[in-house]
Amino acid sequence: MLFRSHVYKNRLKVSISGVKFPKNETFSNKKLTIFSGIKTYTDTAVVFSNLDSIVFMPGAQLLLKNTSLVFNYTNLSYADIKHKLVFNGDSLSTIIFDNLSINFNNVAFTGFSNRLNRLLKNRELTGAITFANSNVSLHNSSFTKNYSGDDLVNFFRCQVFIENSIVSGANADGIDFDFTSGKIINSKVVDCGNDGLDLGGSTLQIKNLTIAACMDKGISIGEASKNVEIDSVVLSSNEIGITLKDESILSIQNVHFNQNKVDFVAYAKKAQYGSSQITSSNLDFSK
Image 1 (cartoon, rainbow, N blue to C red):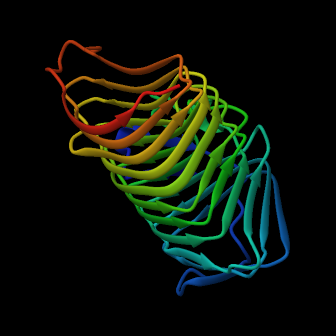
Image 2 (cartoon, rainbow, N blue to C red; image 1 turned 60 degrees about the vertical axis):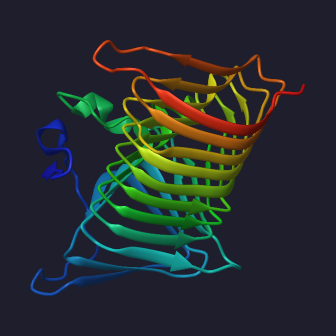
């Protein structure tokens, strides 16, 4: 079958075979799929759409082995403070949330890779885990240790709210925000192989975060990102604390820089952009 994203338009066109749809029910009404216990998908592609109604039971685990899992045009929610919903993917698996409303509380994503890149003529997917054109609310959740991909998590044209969450062990960037707006608060981003947070064309409030041990930038802001606010953030042991570039606008206050190789850098990277702007107050550069 052909999966075509209306978000990526001609940039995301994936041919997949061996697709499994849950149960052999008719398409005249929505199919109810209930995930409980451990559900394993192997050597396949699984697509859920607006024809599906999804229920995650407390403590459900979805294990993906050489599998692409796509949720497309269907709303998803989960909230159970005692039992975590788990998505676990191996080095040949990826997960895509496209055109959804998502409200997750106490959900863990572990593993995954940018499996689809070799199937695209013009690759636009950069994340092991991708949220596209969606309203996304994540609470008390975690993303850990992807196998490959430019980003552990990629938000593309999303409205996001992230709180009390952890991103760790990213192969490259932790979270990439592309043309996305929203907030990330009371969270941690640690041990990333490249940038912790990478903003391009985005508007984001970043508050009460710890960003540490990133091999490149703790926070990278570029491609005309507007009205980015950084408040009450600790940047520690990163190669560079914050970079600002390419006609982006930043307000920064109450930020503590600690033992970064370089704390702050501003520069022009792409010729098509103009100068950036920054306002700042109460910055601590002590070591």
